[in-house]
Image (cartoon, rainbow, N blue to C red; front, side, top):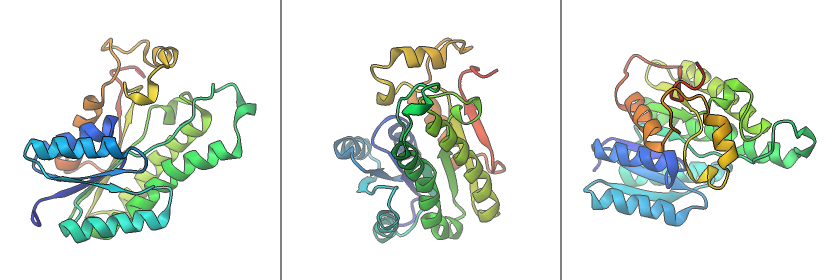
Length: 245
């Protein structure tokens, strides 16, 4: 498998990450399904890819920890010999109504920023040399919360705005060898929003396509940005069924 393109998908065991890994595997890309706590989900995703004739492994690493990220990248290079694509999908949030500003603690801010912003930075930095060597591509998973100022919580919204900016920074830093883009979905029907029907309703009412976004909807755009769209970089593409028009 040394000559096959290799993708690292953080948070790849569930939701958008899982759909992205499955889509890439269908294109013949070897997939590294990263997880920090969802081991069984990651292993299930890997098993499904392999059962369909693809190639995947699961690697545990908390993107909130620098050493864990470095070890993960070393493990991938030792196993596959390369990294061509990176999808920064791992994320964290808390559900605190936007107006309840006194409910926010330093821990909320720190835990969300450490994964969503710092984690995205850590993984891009750790993969940069491999991606440049292989003329690779990155897609970061942002959110319409980054520019709407509403979502699961204020720290989450701000962290996603930071991802949009990191995307532009790294598009400049890694050019011309590596393209760096982001996707900004609306509310996506994943386990994050299970039991939060009112939140889903608030974030999806008015969608022109009259349905909630599915993980596959986002994965299709991510995979196109990685594998084609060769003249697109530094952009954040909105995937919300027309919700923000």
